[in-house]
Length: 281
Image (spheres, rainbow, N blue to C red):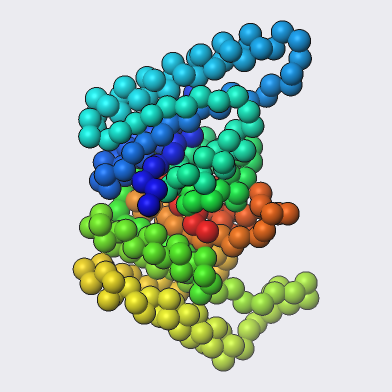
């Protein structure tokens, strides 16, 4: 079984938070760390080789500094570094095939600061072969609980199993299922029949109950809070996870032709991270 946590490291402040989060997990689970830095943007122009070599040397120095900090803070955690030139998305996706977990930072700093820049995080999470944890650039210390979105799919079952590590952390697990009334251009302001709303709530409660059926047996000490809410999934999950230690969402594999596309819910959550967020396929 692969026990490597790979961390994509850049010069941005969020990289420190990503390394710290990965280090805490590796120390708790007796796993090893690989710190990967990627020099991107090379075009193959004349004279570019020297520029790339200098950038790789600077990247290695940055990675070595992170590795020294890891060794000082957690001597029992094996750590290695790797600097490469290439497309950062492709390099990290390739690294995910040899990893138990891939951790990356995001420059998102919370509400009012706008979404994270660029699509790299979304594309990496969509194409990775292992779960991807995205760490935002704000302090999440003092938070508690693990929030997981459940919709009855295989992907959400995998997300639930990942989130059940709350048992190991001694944290409560908040399992959230969200239902959204049907909408159409002509009925956006419609008054829904009470029977329809009641049945939607009941059907979603049943979906959540079925998903959680085996959790009590597998994790007898895990405290589970069930939340069934009406609304739009990414907004509801984001609001609930705002004070959580970790949020976990599933994403559906879409095949080779669309490997860089996430489902809309997970993509929207990554765009405005409520907390450290894991995307599980």
